Amino acid sequence: MPIYQSQTQRKPHFTLQWHITGKCDQNCMHCYRFTDTYLQELENELSHEDCIKIIDDFSNTTRKWNIPGRINFSGGDPLLRDDFFDLLKYAREKDIAVGILGNPNHLDFETAKKLKKLSVMRYQVSIDGMEEMHDKLRGRKGSFKDALRAIDVLEKVGIPSGVMFTLSKMNANDLIDVIHLVADKCSIFGFARLVPVGHGKELKDQMFTPLEYRELLLRVLEVYKKLADNGCKTHYGRKDHLWILLYRELGLLKPLPEDKELIYGGCSIGMNCLSILADGTVYACRRLPLEIGRVPEQKIRDIFIESEILNDMRNYDKIENCGTCELKQFCRGCRAVPYALNGDYACKDPQCWVDEKE
Image (cartoon, rainbow, N blue to C red; front, side, top):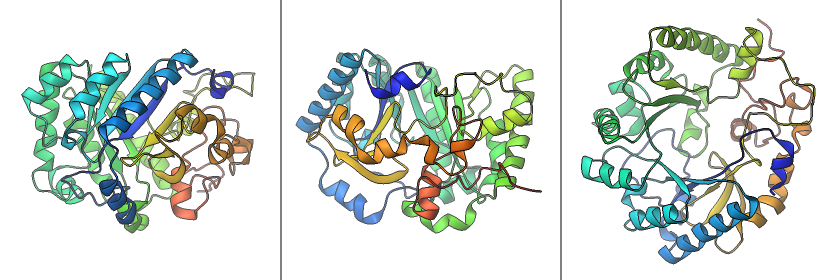
């Protein structure tokens, strides 16, 4: 069994976020790719044979651990890789669940039907604002309309559609409008804070202060409640771990467990996921650009268990503020944001408002 299993009460599973190609026909302002490493990914994209080795290794690893495996294929845009459907089919033959994090513009009905036949469990697209803002952030006019069209296509063929909103001060005024826009149109909606790495490093001045972020979550929660009360079928996720702080303040969190050693939620780094780039570089998280291994040269199990960086990240007591926080088992903030801003993943989450004063 992987070491995280003895420390957590989460439903056991293991997920690879696999960026199988760097090819992309959008140019997003907040993209986490760096120019130098991105060019390296394009030039050294894994061969079909190497990808098959990785799928085999992942399948063998999860079987030995007796937990279900899932691969979220991403990119770039995974649909732009020539052998994408061959790899997808092979993963399904290995009984690996698959999801897709992709662009909308190449997703037509015929493609969606092929994905449905292969039992793709979810296809996630991005909507980062209303039309003007979204197209500006994505660097392509028409991207907004393509996203809405893709959602409609997915729902019609029976693939649950996910919508992700990357949040910063730049597009915060559009968030609630987008929440209403996708109501009853997509299956799942969530938003995640900007991590200023890659292209996004130019947007460091668009980060929220802790109290600004708390106020925004309060407003969003009120909107979520009203939509739920009106019978909205879209599931509005609470992806950000800082929701836990707000729920605790509002008395919405269940009583805290007596066992203080178990992990019940929060950041998945070092617990049940890894991220693989197009050239085989392995990260603990795609938004935290620290190489912890390389596949297929190394086994997934060896990277996950033996990586010094990953084992250091599992030392939750060393995380500033989190180590002594009563919500450590549920939250622990985001490790990628402090690394992007301060060069240290053990620093306090910059948007955490614990101990902040009005």
